[in-house]
Length: 231
Image 1 (cartoon, one colour):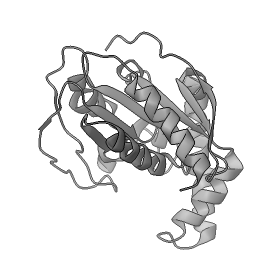
Image 2: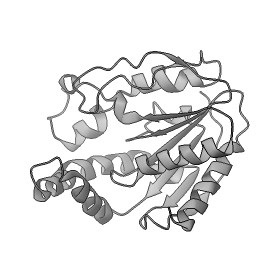
Image 3: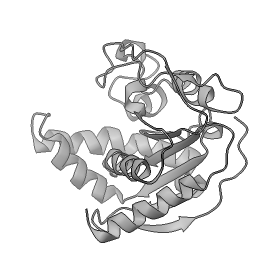
């Protein structure tokens, strides 16, 4: 890891550790597909664990997908289906975020579905300490049903051209070809994420915005105190 990346992660970790809450801190890593959300969340969790004795819970929202057979409102493979139907926001809220919030039971699940969205997964119920830190990455965490439940949102900025380039390079390994992966991003992921940008304005709402176009030298371009949360 480069020194520049280490510095940025240290700044974000310090911001999280400065949160003074009576319940676990719930941190979301937001951004486009291929923005580097999972990588940064993994690294951030490691930095936090090295800096504090507080328990760090690492979760991917990709494990809270709605079963593919329940995505019936929009045509399969459409941007609308991706944005509106892929993730089970009720389960994310009720099984993960609300239990960790004010007055919550602290009993949560870390996953309910496999990554393909075809096989339910029973992760079991775990109990979080009051001073735990949740670091969660995944698609569309600032949807209206979820936004009030985060104590800090970190948004990773990259350009659509970066999404296409990085996503094609990454996903061609499991798709038929690079062309197939590129087409998937052009017709599905990017237009679906544009719906999110238009409805939510996630970068504008985030507490921290990181320019992650240069993976080796991410930089914080905005950091502000989190607004009041109600859940």
